[in-house]
Image (cartoon, rainbow, N blue to C red):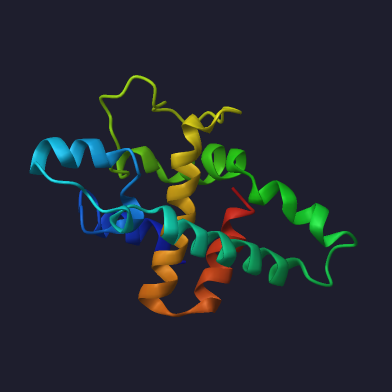
Amino acid sequence: MHDIFKDYIERHRGDEQCVALVAASYKQVYQKQHHRQLPDARTNTDLATYGDALLRFSLMGLFLNKEDDLSEHVKPYLTDEFLIEHVARHYHLLDYILFDRDNPRIPKEYTFYESDRTKYIATTVEAILGAIFLEQGDLKAIFALVESFTHL
């Protein structure tokens, strides 16, 4: 089966124009390199909100009428911990995310922490989901991708 997530991140590796892969911390790097501000709209935060909605919608659709307690069944797949330790790790996503790699306070590993320090990794997973849907407009493909996440 064609992996649209892997295809997306490989096509956009290192691309500052690919909002899905630009974490908020990259604004500092951009400022140093280009001597101007990177607008908030050029980071993945808003796109991640869209991707989060797609993730929730897909999971609910996948398990509707298949599980007794739907909300409880999908809950583990919606956590930052799952997105970081399973999805991001599977795709080696840290190799693709544009973030401030010189900042020692930003973890560069696939371990979830209760603090928000690793949130940027989960945010990127969600943003990529949103970007793939915007690019392809294929909800069935998103459903299949999200279903594949549940088997990682």
